[in-house]
Length: 304
Image (tube, rainbow, N blue to C red; front, top):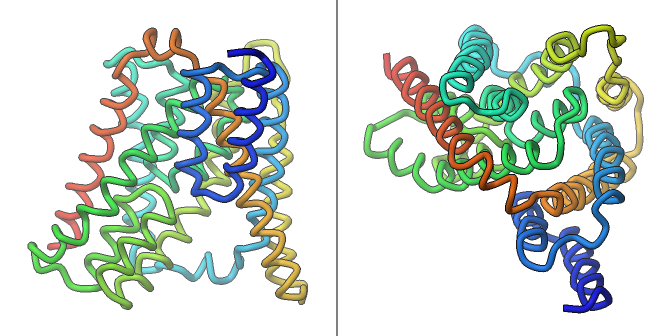
């Protein structure tokens, strides 16, 4: 395939990624990388880094500080325990399985907090490369898709109440979109419970970002402040206290989501066959193990 044709295919997919889900956008990028190869290697990496940070900040205009803090008060304690527990377990299992530390940390972050959003926020802070980020996102998105379809039938089979299922889904399913989908499939009350508790978990991006800065700083290197996380908090505070027009905040969030999809496409383009062979199936195994542990543990607690 000529370079011109490769570039044409690349740009068609890049534009197409703006109109699909984040998971599909990521896999489109991976498909490009593994078939025709991304024609703009260095540019992809540079653009994806800053576009990702801008997208995260933009998403802050879709969050309300009071609603987030008030959300899921009943599940607050278990949320704290589950977040800390998953992060610690993920790091330990990562070492046992000999998974790249950054990759293990990203998968653990996505499992513990809010899937792709947590990975997107943490990746630039720990200076994860495109391979680590792509593999972590792919692992999380695959498990999200499975959870979306299997959780509601399991909930019905076990006779879970709306409250029980909403709590279980919010903590055991990674991405907000999949939590909302599973909750909606189970019932209106389950949807409300799942959404509010999920908002509480999303707030853990802030302390996780600060901890990540300290954990992954290089010796002799100054601590890099994750300014985009502070801007994300600022956007959420502005959205809470400043009476902005609804059309403005809605437009910003919509643009941010499309930017995130394009970013995931670019990140996927950075994956290589060599990196997949080198890493193997270990990241997926780690993701599955963490997912099984948090799912069974949460299910046991809500059924007590």
